[in-house]
Length: 245
Image 1: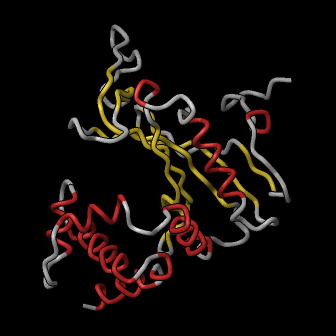
Image 2 (image 1 turned 45 degrees about the vertical axis):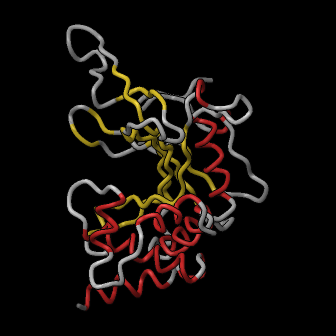
Image 3 (image 1 turned 90 degrees about the horizontal axis):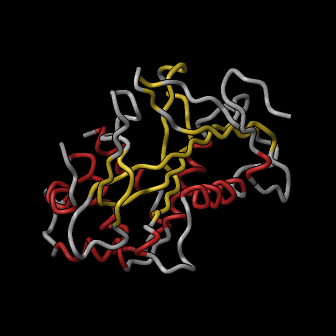
């Protein structure tokens, strides 16, 4: 019971981000997500999170994601501030950016479209180059990397902000943005959260065919007031090569 009490006390820190009914639904979903084994669709998460509680209609939890009064970026900022306390000031603050494909189906799926599937594609490792596309959501995610307390040589990436990349054919022209544009938007947002004297390292999250590889920092610098990220400010040389002049 001590582990459950510690987890609930951790969730209480997020109560200022929600109204009272929304916070109760948030606790139910968070507990259900942790207790659920295997795939985590919303109905199963509700089932595991509602054990020992008064049963509520499942539409209430869908309402939490679609119409409840809470802001994902504000929640991410609060989580980022908690994670920042776990990083020694002597280490640079490492941010990782990546996009992930969540395969989905259904005619009523909002924001779903065809995206390149990196897991099914072979990238030319076989005799011919094969590219696969899958229907679903493409999420651009930015994480903060913190060292594990019990092993300083190991790290954990905690997602703090995300954006949905909608397909060009299924999105109004004025609302369409590329993955790189969404990533830059989140990086600039997070730069406003970071103290000016803190060093920042921006790295792409990558995995190679031969196994995971430690990401190589692309940009390390002190943040100054009014600083903005741009394509020209990020070094664009390959690992092991000198920068082009």
